[in-house]
Image 1 (spheres, helix red, strand yellow):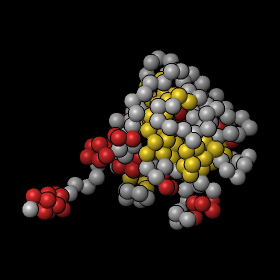
Image 2 (cartoon, protein in one colour; image 1 turned 135 degrees about the vertical axis):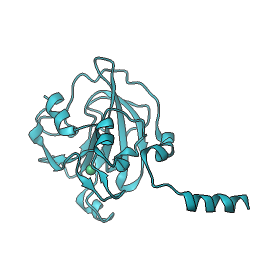
Image 3 (tube, helix red, strand yellow; image 1 turned 90 degrees about the vertical axis):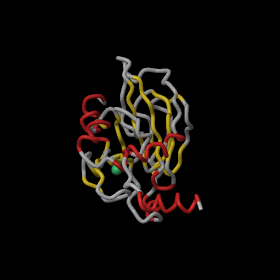
Length: 208
Ligand SMILES: [Zn+2]
């Protein structure tokens, strides 16, 4: 009887998902580790001829775009990118700077790795890498810009999931207090600016 009441209560009072009511679901995937090394030098997240040269990435989708995928009406919290000239069929993804892996969450076409960074002034920030086909790191692992984190989907593999997942969804975050769900539950500019840097601006200022 109690179970039935709980189920009925859940059906009648089910809230629409928000960052605040969804974040606890993602907390178990988070490891509270600290980066050993400072993120003092920043690079593009791919093995391209020059990881300091912005023209070596191709931007497919920009930050702040309206989205109906995954959760309807959310705002794009990332830039979607690929290497402009991929060296190999399988595109590897690397951390943009020194840090520690603090979360690996979601599965299949949405698999995501989050790296926590410590800046020279002691501030903490995060980079997140989404749509990964294979992940080569684990939670709590210290990484540097040459650590292979993962690889992307090939166009053929992406087709199996009925969408375009053969790109990197790259977020540059001010915080990770949502444990990842803000990636699909950010519904307005206030929430966007609260947690995210515009990756294009960040890259322009730091990857040089
Ligand atoms: Zn994206």
